[in-house]
Length: 336
Image (cartoon, rainbow, N blue to C red; front, side, top):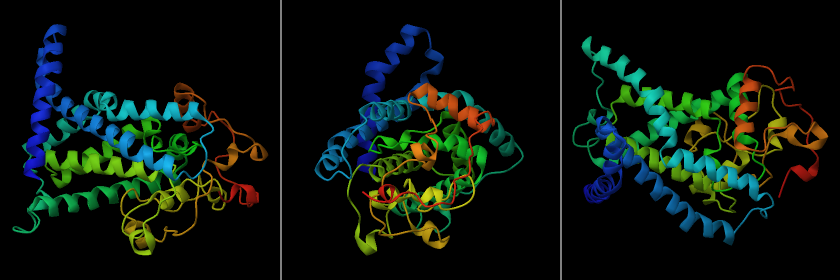
């Protein structure tokens, strides 16, 4: 872990001193030097993730695809979402919109004597091991993601935003970041709050984010892959998560949208809370009311239309029924 951190730090220092710092001085923004150094870290993490997506996940998709690629335009929009999120543009928004709020709140709490005890200090000699504490923080933040994801499918106003993600009929390794920006802003505000409460060290937080994002890029891939009867219960696979996006099941339960297989990394949460379905195949993805026979609802064909329609749904301006009908879908929609 120390070797990896040292190598990453050297790359960050080189990128910052070679490109970022000179640009800041040229633009008269030298007062943001410290923050820009952190931004350089996220830029480097994102670039490394995109390299893995292209060089590793891409060949896997071409080797064992679930379905042929028929809508390259929508995949191109997903790539745009990925670049926005992974290369720092979205984190820049967080820096101005969310971080100052939590800095103020927790700064005041520190003045009042509140000092969260880092979780990796609860068992000296065991949890202070870098790999053990990383595994522990992965579990904690995966639980946060699980419950937030359940809320996205439970509450109509959150589902109105989250539907942007589920409306992709051509799911690929680029689809993880296809989210409404307001939805991501709310979710990241929750993550920042939890990170402050559990006292996760900055280096561990970066590792948790990078690992989780890469795992979710893989789980969204257009890839026939599962991890076997045991492995499928330990780690989320493309088959396990594809069922969560299935266009067949979201019409089978009441509420804004039904749901199974909510976990991002570890299916243990779905097992514990009885939302797991294993070995269910590789069905087509999307939302049932996108189908012509169910009304052909429009969720937006471009980036800005997807964002705008999400806001309209949240405000109740899009009057189409948010609750899926209970009738079964035609057999053609149930499997690939």
